[in-house]
Amino acid sequence: MKKSKKSFANKHVSICHRPESPEALNKAKEIANWLDELKVQVYSPSGKKLGKHVKSLDSKTSLDKLSLMVVVGGDGTYLRAANLLEGRPTPILGINMGSLGFLTETRVSEAYRAILQFLENKMELHQRSIIKVTVVKGGKSHKSYFALNDIVFERGLDTHLINIGISFEKNLICDLKADGIIVSTPTGSTAYNLAAGGPIIYPSSSVLSIVPINSHSLTMRPLIVPDDRQIHIRILSKNTSAFVTVDGQRVEEVKPTDSVVIEKSDRDHLTVREPGNNYFDLLRDKLKFGQRD
Image (tube, rainbow, N blue to C red; front, side):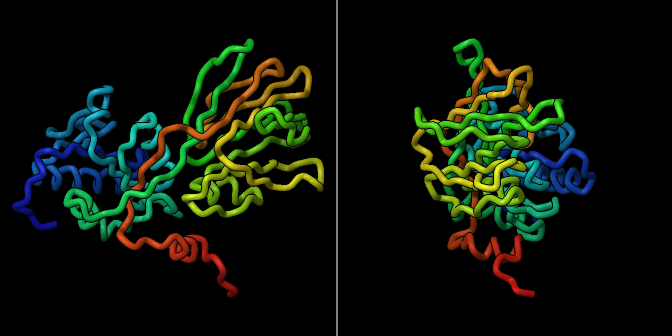
């Protein structure tokens, strides 16, 4: 990338790269140096690893200052970056150096142009819903987590299926015997949800998907519900446990005396897209959607 005379001294950008990839690290260093030439203050969870001028993203103050988070890697790296933001409305631009790249949509060859367009306010920001999961222990809220993709409630170390009770607000949906259950956002509908037989949901839809994992009943099918009410999940089996996984990270083990409450967060995620971005182009490109060959 040629040096630019432009200056964006009021911008603060963090770079989050795929940790196990030397190629992603090198590209992150290149972008950090280029941003420094543009007078942008650069941050990174890796800190000085990207350069002497790069500050560590290790405090609430630095997170609050961010204008943009640049992700160099795959969708897993993107989700980790979103988790770092802890619900802050900081836009994320994903540069694909992974495999599928559904969230990291920007090609490496287009990285500098896309970042520059963002700094010049020429990119679009698309809102994506986030879900909040609260683990309830002893009748009290124990801890809450946020997910951009999905929440998975799955059997613990026991190899047997577990009995799960699922309710929508105070209304029972069903008692289910399965390996677990996936509650997905529209953004996460093309991830585990899709692999488990769930539907693809248009990103701006105000719904959640509930999909069983290896249900013991042929009549249990994926279900779409509005996202303005709570979903309650609990274990009905005695002497067993289940794990709660948030965006691929296992966070809690729950017992039959505990419950899990899932609801739409009051905070949205912002993803950076090219003007005129077409979601169906992305489906055809990444998932070969509709192809007959």
